[in-house]
Length: 633
Image (cartoon, rainbow, N blue to C red; front, side, top):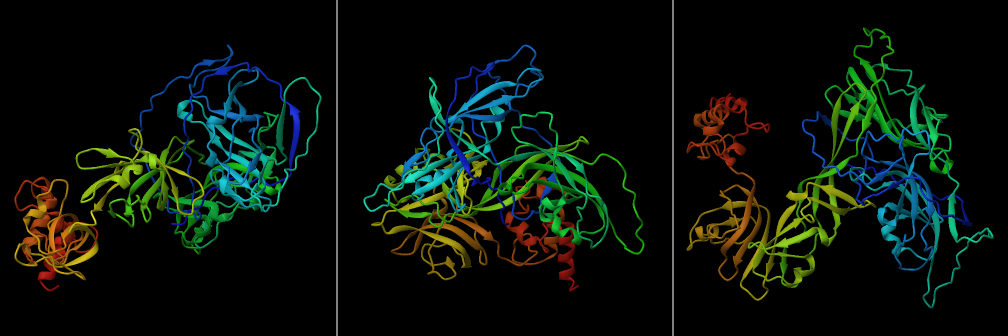
């Protein structure tokens, strides 16, 4: 699935740099704020198939009330103080860098307001540089090319604009600040002997004053925030095969950080600002398609929703957070279709929570899982399944959770989130990996400080992600001693051509490999597991082999695909009515005849796999198909 990122808005307009006096202002309200991270999510390039499920459980959140001094007439019905960005008080001190230096935001200080019911000015709160993440900054050169702030040190000499468009803090830690948007200029110089020297160019206005002067950079770009739908599309009734028509759509917006709080949508945007493929059309069954596939939908009732920014930052008309939805009907038979009168019922309006990315399994192990003593730890080739979930509720009292699935190629996971342990439970860091003893296996786990979340970089994605639920993200690595005859070897999707125990015969043969000797001792080592293997199985894992006589000492070997005749539920290598009977027994009395049942003749994992005649899991139909096959039908 292709991934669309909601790109940070790039500030490349003319930027006024002035030296001016910034007096110290005592805020009327003091809030004690604790620093925390915030989770943000990416969207997809083309609207993915999104499935919705009703919320069945809600996590309990332990709340800690911040120390707060508010005006006496300020409402405190909510203990969450999610503030709104107001202005930059101090920009970062460092604006001239030598090539190779990292971005330094020391000295950065912003102010924000906390909404209240007071008629006086809203309570003010300040955030210093500790609330910002370097990776959330965007650095743009004169040609408009951009990199994230954590790659600042890789840039060549030149003049750049550093921009921030993101929220900071954490809502659940009571210190979140929304939509912190600003930018400033920096210069990178190359002080190498052969480099061409470039002096930073600064336009200043000198003001005589007894207070300290501070360099303030002001962006001339105007941006807007979505407020309401002025009018919905005129067409809400379609015949099958017709394209989505948004004629008549108008939304209202107000300027961000405006000095006019009563402005509730004076700026208006018509349908020309919207892209059809950015709309999502969802049916009653929860299945969704993008707006450009509207004509492929069958007759029925649908919800058309939009959740994107519109306009163009460089044309000074960008509008953020445009979210709304409305209902449409597609009629079936064009000849017999009748005109449906649109009612004035209030359209469904969805409000979204903060999305979170979750781990959903390992798709491909790292390329290297077998090492020699002294080798560096290497995650290259690791591919994981993940999904993004976000809750939403509407004005009709309905709640849902939306899920979007991804496949991520892991580019990097910081070593602080990786723990390596041996079978005794002793743990090691990634830096200690080169010192680990060979002739043994180790377990790699991910997380930090007891929390099952990590930060990682994804191939092709500029921004760092935060991934939750990684307790299942674990695998084994094996370290060989180069001078020993016994060595670990990796097995990838190998077909078993024969499998017999015996110390005197080479009864274990994998396709494309020399025959091996194996006896029951291979199953006797704690921590290792070789599954019950039969001819025709496809297996993957690791074996430890005595290379002098091709003897299997131990290993971790799992069956990827079971061999055997389809329908052989009792795994006796014969298709018979007994197989159909076992399927019916397992379905009727799973505690006795199902997998892990109490009866000695219960269904096994192997039997469940090969008894499935049509690929949809074990059902009564499989028993019927076995009978038909035996009768030649």
